[in-house]
Length: 324
Image (tube, rainbow, N blue to C red; front, side):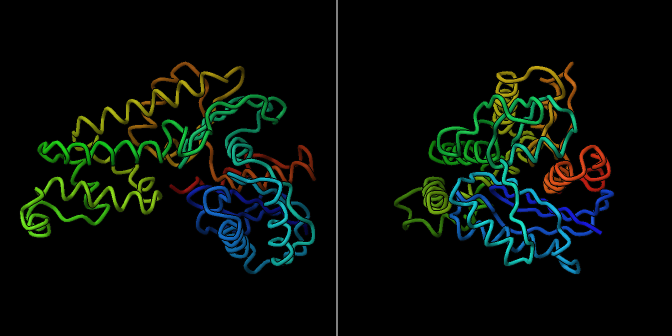
């Protein structure tokens, strides 16, 4: 018996999967963020090790014949960390390290050529030829790019909320959802918490949200689903953000797309919601498929390199849909 292991280490969640040679999934594990560029090598390595140990629970790690690690924000130095993690987990050979876009594409299609549109915490598009990336658009990080991704959406939503509070506009669903997300009290209690009436309640709420957002940018990224929720509740500003995100994502894909399918990946695009619906509408006429578990895609890539076409894509990736 031989096993294959795959890891998908992203900016929010790390997933690991272990499969038998026939594609049966034998183990799966999740942990926190595994992006070393965003969270540091030590924290990312610890998350990857935790997810991998959970996936290997009850299995003999010495049976792992090959493995692939898809890492967002990885670099050459991080490869050493992965070697140490694999050794600590009892796997003799270190993984083949690829980008998170590679495992996301593999999670959606076995096609040699096509395009990946990824929108999780970040956002990027990549064109593949012979399963190798030949062109990339965006993926420039939370500070300067990743337009239409989760951080971009969350930041736009939080910015819109604090601007509405700063202007003293009537609070709509987006303002109230963002305030609750940051633990900032609503009108009745916040007035008492303000500076004895010197600063008005809306401005006090805005200042409090700004301080908390600056202290932890991941709180901003985590606000992304609130924009979709507010849009569904009829908030016009949230609806505008949803539309802008979808247009940016479709434009990013269009910059690199050639032949083959477009694979949608990442939590923003794999879960039913207004952004996914708007992107699907903008991509009408294209062949669009949705990626499943990125860790399964990584495991399939490991098996593909070892077994060739005997590693059936549908068996490896078709068992479970990627959780949100």
